[in-house]
Amino acid sequence: MKRIKALHFTRNVHGSFRTQLSDLYRSVFALPPWNEIFSDVEMESVIGTWESAPNESDIHLLTHEEDDKVIGFGVGTRLDDYHDSKEVLIHIQGDPKIIYWITELGVDPNYQTYGLGRLLLRTLVDRSTERGFNTIATRTRPDSKAFTLFQKMGFVEVGRDEFTTGGVSSMRAILMKTL
Ligand SMILES: CC(C)(COP(=O)(O)OP(=O)(O)OC[C@H]1O[C@@H](n2cnc3c(N)ncnc32)[C@H](O)[C@@H]1OP(=O)(O)O)[C@@H](O)C(=O)NCCC(=O)NCCS
Image 1 (cartoon, rainbow, N blue to C red):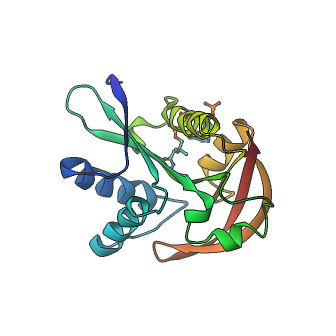
Image 2: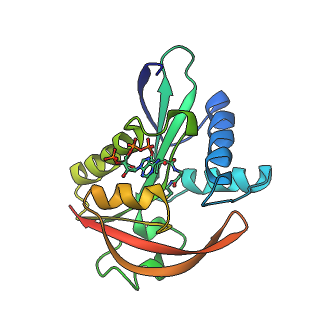
């Protein structure tokens, strides 16, 4: 496998990183079990939502060494900045200002199974712990590899709900971990 350069931490995604992130996001979620499709406009809106969160989202990009190719992403925010926080708070009790919400996690299919998903998730957990959040939570498909990864990292399922994105409605598990 090519060498991984580093994790880039950013609030806004500029230049070629933006195009690469859009392309990667679309290719990751176009695959089963997700089968989601995002137009250019929808994709811009997804990234724009992360960038415009009142308390600023954290956007972690993983690149490889030779050419700064973006091969993974992990995005998180305060739960009260997440657009669907009301639905989430049905399942997780607590102050949404100190609950950290993992919005997105994805690794280029060519680079999956090498521990990079775990690295990105570890980064989100560590950063949220350092900043005083007492809970970290997310929502994912119960039939996804991500679900297994979250469970292995100590997240427990606290509920399920129907969620629609990329033109697909599916049952999602809400998972949380006390920090
Ligand atoms: C979930 C995802 C980020 C994992 O990335 P990855 O780099 O392959 O993950 P890792 O190599 O760090 O593996 C971590 C764990 O994920 C699970 N996993 C990874 N690949 C798997 C596979 N092919 N089958 C089953 N589980 C798998 C395993 O539990 C694995 O733990 P292990 O190493 O102890 O076996 C990646 O599969 C992905 O991008 N999926 C599509 C997008 C997605 O589902 N995002 C989450 C939306 S909330």
